[in-house]
Amino acid sequence: MKLFALVLVASAGLASSASAQSLVPLSTFGVNGWRAPGVAVAGDALGTTDGLGNYLGLNGAGSNTERGLAYNRATGNLILVTRNGAITAGATQIRVLDGTTGQDLRGLQQPGSLITGGSIFAINQVGVSDSGQVFVANAVSDIRTGTGFRVYTWGNDSASTTPTLHFSSTSMPAWGTGGTAPRIGDSFDVIGSGANTRIVAGFSGNQGYLTITGDTAPTGRVFTNAASNPTAPAGSGTLTGTNANGRFSQGLTFAGNGDTIWGKITAGTAATAHLVRNQITGGTANTIQQAGLASASESRMDFATIDGQNFLATLEANTGRVFIYNVNNPAAPQSVFTFAGSPTGFSAIPGTATYNSNGNATGSVQWGAINNSLAQATLYVLSSNNGIQAFTFTVPTPGAMALLGLGGLVAGRRRR
Image 1 (spheres, rainbow, N blue to C red):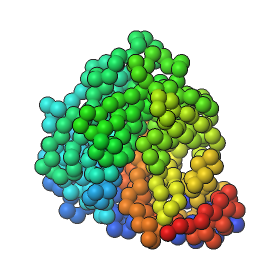
Image 2 (image 1 turned 90 degrees about the vertical axis):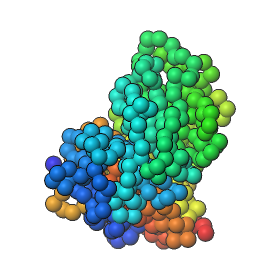
Image 3 (image 1 turned 120 degrees about the vertical axis):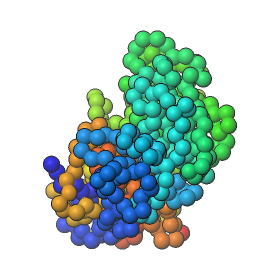
Image 4 (image 1 turned 180 degrees about the horizontal axis):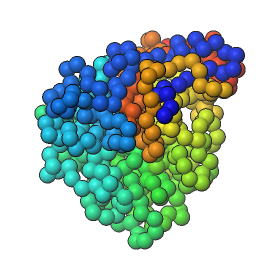
């Protein structure tokens, strides 16, 4: 077992305080910034603990039951999807957590007559619109069969809100037969609100992704390469550009707007340390695959603009490391925390804990509340089998960023 630590490493010869001051545990969240698997928090909702007092919403080694986490900017809460069947005895599997303390506040309604199907999981990933509308997706091994890919929605995260079916892939034109089954539902993101809401979900096995645009009458559109096998539905968009295969099966985020999508995979024949940037214009999505990330095993990711600067946070699921990049120049991501030599410096986890294997590289990275006046943001990291960690990230000052530039970081000018 490895020491459970989301580790930030200073470059050789650089004082560790420059890094440590930029990312620190959110002390009010769980214990020392960590809502550990199975550990109850005072005030957790009824039905979320077993007879021994163990919290059922976050589970430990070998469980693989928590893969989806999202931040609700309208309420400051987190939405957690758990597939632990035991929790359904007195609660539901879609939990609302306090973003400051990690306390389980309540569950969202989960009627079995509506939320059903999903050849892999009936519920798996979650996202929240800018206005607080919650979206939960299933995961299917083949979008062409059964109930297809489904997305459910709640107007807010209140316990009294009734969900509806937001989208079903069965409403789209048919795919071709044969070929590699288009698996979908492992990666998911949401941006915008109302009629401008856009959802993206990445394919596994096939290249590309599905976008779902709109609110009351959402429209789905597949973006894939010309050599897609099976043939994509009529009206699909095309991935073009450098390495137009796209890599969106495990890591995926909107990068500032609904037409800019970045992605990442952790395995396969691709150059897996590369970030994939995708820009949609009409029916075409131009793809650029580039070097720039520190680890081949980074996958889960999220983008945010903080104090006028753009940042990408990622999770390396094999070790639990968090990486943060300044992406003001997206063609050259610059690590705020470099990884030269052995892991040293910052650890958010008590030293007696161990990091449970996350062999599926599942989980979520989510930027939370952003305070531009303080140049700070909250960052949440869910690594399956290992609970949730919460951090406060402070944008490095120009001087600190210049020092970090010794390890490859380009300083950016702060704007207020």
